[in-house]
Length: 438
Image 1 (cartoon, rainbow, N blue to C red):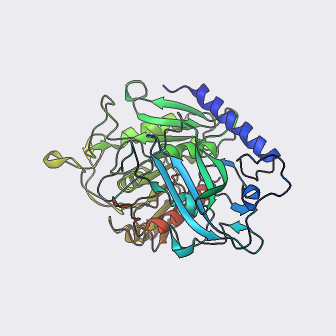
Image 2: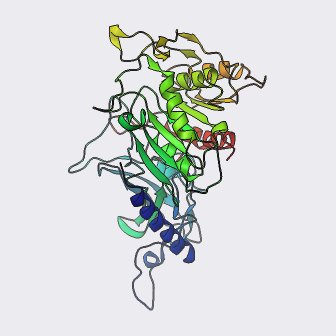
Image 3: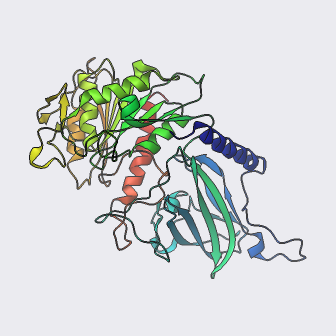
């Protein structure tokens, strides 16, 4: 088990850093200034100012540059490292105004690279892995992913912002992006001890009771929802990132979506609902892609356990087994009996289903599925909800900003939907928090 005390100590240190930054106005660069000179060059006066130098990973920050020369042409860059130590970065060329100032939220990079529209967070979300000594591209097929360390091991990550002119650095600033704050607690759940495999994050004892959230991914397997669970806990919602297949050797879980029993998920929900700060009557389930199928089934078949359902890039029907080969019977089961493939009814759901889809989803027709979901009514007769982002693809799930970088081709190119996917995550995350009653 990872030590909760380590998480608390690290989070406390971050809070102290935030307080220090606040006392200094949260503004200037952290690069040292040369001692007194009679004439100070523009390069010595340049600074990077951010309104939230320490913030949750799903919160946007405003980035401004000052102290430049009038209409100076400069390069602004963002840098981070993933859990393997691989450097990620992105840079854009900008022009300061007549007062030597630059606001990334009001100006896009010249030439539209690495993004076309103004946005303070766009440089961070545009980062991609960099080739270099001791590094290599990570990814399978055409997709690359930024994988931060587990929030329980590293409750935040740093992003370094720099400004340079003609190859000379003028200013630098490090901002901290937090997964956890305050006294958020973590506990590793195992099949051997808890009958489920997952990462449990809960707010401090004595916190206001809020809707707990059971989070899980899709055909990628593993524990892909852990960072989302940590952020939800930081916002006051007890959350469990559940692994239901491909959980690692010795986990006791299968390596295929084949006869995955709903009882496994309800067992996890009951563990979550007993945590301090959890209101079990408001328990929600959040599933992505193939996980959206079982999320809807749980809301429909177990309304006494689950209230609301968040279905990212959803299917409106039960599909067949995945990675099961000739031995596959059905993807999902109830008390050992296969649940037949076909449309998913949602008329017994106690709360609402929120379906989030991309209109340019090449994986499957999640837009059409979302519309079919929203056309149904819940147990009280209210319609379910859906939102479609026309230019977004299949990856509209989870939170914004927290994963610096996006999917890109093996040649370093960026997928056509990357920007729209990011915008979809930013908008839909606020809808999710509203549904949860945050």
